Each structure stands twice: as C-alpha cells, then as structure tokens.
Image (cartoon, rainbow, N blue to C red):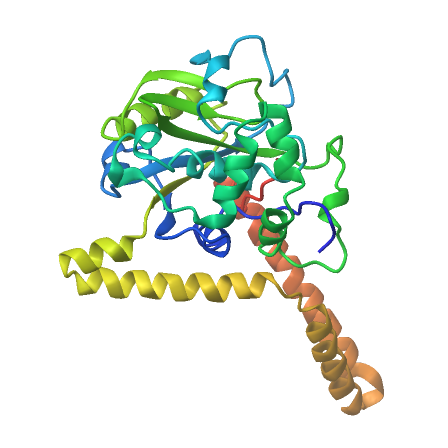
Length: 334
C-alpha cells in the first residue's frame, strides 16, 4: 500500500476486524437490512450506526444549516468530532466517531455502553480532544497506525492506486459514510464534511433505535424513489458474549462461523490473483495448442469463450434493468 488512504468496502467483517486490529475489545458490526427499530434494538447494547449513501453532486453538500436537525458548534468541546481532511478515510472516521464517544459512562449514557478502545486509540483520543475539529482531522489523516490498519482491508489491485483517485473524477458515483450515536443525552449526526455535529434532539441509549430510524427515514425520503444504494451497519457488543451469557450454543456456533467467514474474506482482500490467473491461462492455451488440428481447437475455444461472455453481459443487463439499475456492491469513495 502507498502512504495515502485506500478505499475499503462497507462490510461488517471489514469494520469488525479493523477495530479488532486497532486493539478494540468486544465490539462487532452487524448489517441492517431494514429500518425497523426493533431489529436494531434486538442487538442491544447498540453503540451507534454507520450510514453509507450516495454523495449528492447536483447541489452543495455543506450548507449554512442542515436539512434536518441543528448544528451544535459547542458540542465539539465535549465529544469527539473531527473534520474530514483526506479522501477515502470517511469509513474509518465514521466508526471512530462512534467509538471514541463511548469511553466513559457519562458520554455513553450508562456503564453498559462503555467500550474498551485499547491504549492506541485512547492515546489518540487524549491527544486530539484538546484540538479543534479541523486539527483532529489532520491528526487522523497522519495517524500512521490507523491508516495502516485501514489500508490493510483495501482490495489489492496491481493496476489502480486508490490514493491517487481524483475527487473531480465524474465517471463514477461517489459515496460517503457518516455516524449516528447518542452522546451526553443527545442524538448526534457526526459527518466530517459538515462544520459541526448535528443535533437531532434528546436521546439516550434506550431511545436510540427508534429515534435514529426516524432520522434515517427522513434522510432516505429526500432521495429519488429509484435510489436504493444505501448501507447501514450497527456497532454493537460482540454477540458471542450474549450467547455465552444466555447459554445459547446455537447462536454461539453461528457467530463463530460468521467470524471464520469474515477472516477468510478479509484474507482474500489482501491478495490479487493476476499472476495466478495468468499462469492458468498460459497452461490452458498451451494445452489447446498441443491438440494441433491446425490451430482449430484453439480458435474454437476462443469463440466459445466470446460467446459465453456475450451471454453473461446480456444476462447482467437484463438483471440490472429488472432491479432498477442496482445490484452492485457499494464501495466507499468518501
């Protein structure tokens, strides 16, 4: 990886092990497939949610007043809020916006919602809390440990340097991560591209599922009805802890299998298979050429491959049309 920040996927396994590698204990992420408050409440204790959405390019994003809620400029003195100063870091910045506000019972709301963030992140929080938000963002962008852990979950590519992606590149849609979490009795929207935390009114841990879902419903309603590219991840306590407390061995086994799957998928992200695919292709070509027949076997194989590719392209076009243009994995470009 280069010295910049690479893009990472909006994925529960990526975010869970990103925090684990930073030294955070007993925290995991769960993807939410609906905006049902009960689905979120069942994951209790819930520390906050990370919301991924399409970044609007048809209007200014940073405005004098938010479209929902109110700016609370004074709140930055008592909670962790950092201005986003670097591209591609918004996913990690969003999860830190939740995590670094759960270090004591006062800010978290009660002792059950306090998280052990580990010595590295505690040192980072202690150092940055005396700084204004813009300098906290600069400190994050230059935090080598956090950047290295973040980049370790980027998809490996021998062809693209994600750190050199131009923000003015209009060939792809851009996406952005923000955080919602209750801090000091208030529901805050923490978005590093906004000038201050956005208050959505009084809220404690018990009220959070219902209140945050109301806010998200209003936010999504502002998009065109055909826009479906959203992703919502909940930051919760490790579900294996609950399984052990309740003696629910079925849940424990399911969660252990999930962790194994996440570890396998994260390992795959660290490797590119171009060299392997090249060797396989060379072997297949050599085998076809050995069949002789004046090269007809090789030519026939090429034509079969082209025909299969044409059919796949047509099937994808039909599937995309039936789904209203959705169906692709979402990668952050914040």
